[in-house]
Image 1 (cartoon, rainbow, N blue to C red):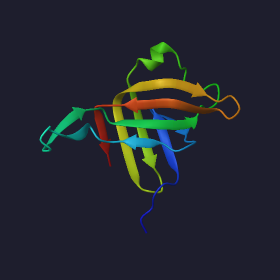
Image 2 (cartoon, helix red, strand yellow; image 1 turned 90 degrees about the vertical axis):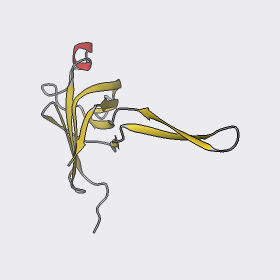
Image 3 (tube, rainbow, N blue to C red; image 1 turned 45 degrees about the horizontal axis):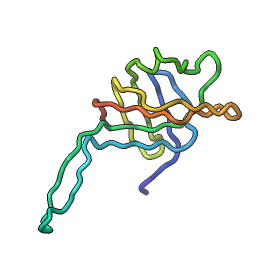
Amino acid sequence: MDTKGGRYSVRVNGQRFSGRGKATVKPAAAIPKADPNRDGTAYRTVEAKLPMISLSFDRGDKASAIKWDETMLLRNVDVTFVEDDAGYTHYFTAGSWVGEPDIDTDTGEVTGMSVASDQYRMA
């Protein structure tokens, strides 16, 4: 059976965090676009982009929570995202945080953050 979705785990700089909502992986390093010339013939352009993962995870306890200050946000980050049931592992090495952290104080869920990296690979 071909398994989709399911459980996943997240490691940020080697520290494990519990996933909450869905994560979205954008593995492509380029975006192709096709448009028409004035005579109806087509042309294509390609825009470079960084592979990215958007995450939703539990902030953890006080001792293990990420300190969302500018020093941490500007530092390189390594993210390992494991799709436990589907069997895929995604590595975003020496990446950059993108976005603004949004911490839900009722549930401890962190949203609004992505990691982009030019050193993405999937195993």
